[in-house]
Image (cartoon, rainbow, N blue to C red):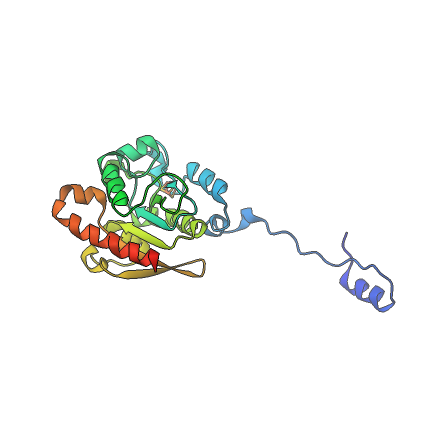
Length: 230
Ligand code: SF4
């Protein structure tokens, strides 16, 4: 029950209590902008929201969404571009040949994609749905999907984000710089008021076609390992 504030003040002045006070109406989350609603979601809500998402045209051609996998309290978060054909079929990021190479790269620095230990990473993509024919993601698609990734980073609160491939690096860092110029240094992104270090490396699918760059990728992993250990 609420009481008119003027009358409440009068009752208080007369020493008549208790006095009812105006209560702020609870905020109706459904009236908030989409990105604000996503920014408040817990893991279950976020996963359900992605599974049902129709915010861009990619929902029409996907087999299933690819939310992300791994340790939700990970120190390392890995971010790729978008699901490919196998990921779209299985609903998991980085499967197939590129996924096996990624697993080997992780193992080389003592990391794994399974379990909940400190060594277990979390893996997600910038886009949660497969662009048809593996075409490049469109700006509108990235804009619509970005709040999901940002919320995942917030919820995980990782010590480091390792971003794989030119597209993912450019999207996350908001730049059109080449991957060659982005590698080899520690970038920072602001997530929920926290500055999160970001290291850029090649996408495993690229490394399968360009074996000579594996050594550079190893150097990137070592840099990332140093950042996490600092
Ligand atoms: Fe929604 Fe992202 Fe899928 Fe587009 S790509 S439909 S924004 S989940």
